[in-house]
Image (cartoon, rainbow, N blue to C red):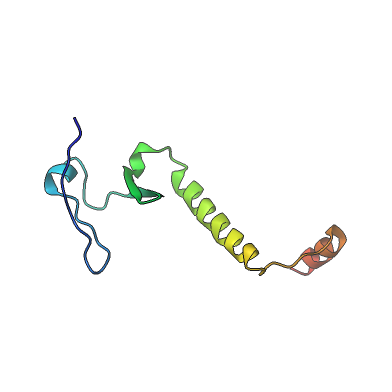
Length: 89
């Protein structure tokens, strides 16, 4: 049966996990938070494989780049122009 409890968010955006629900976790343990609509899923990083941190960093950078692309912040150029520009970097 699922363990159910009620908590609230502070003015700083902090949410307290009730003591009886966090006993198996240690101070400093890292978690992944997944937002799906209005649902938040909290999962311990140790439950994922070792490459998760790198994958999350890459996913976040990709998402940020996509947002910049949608705002029109990227330049468009053909392959020859790109290779020429690449040599200057």
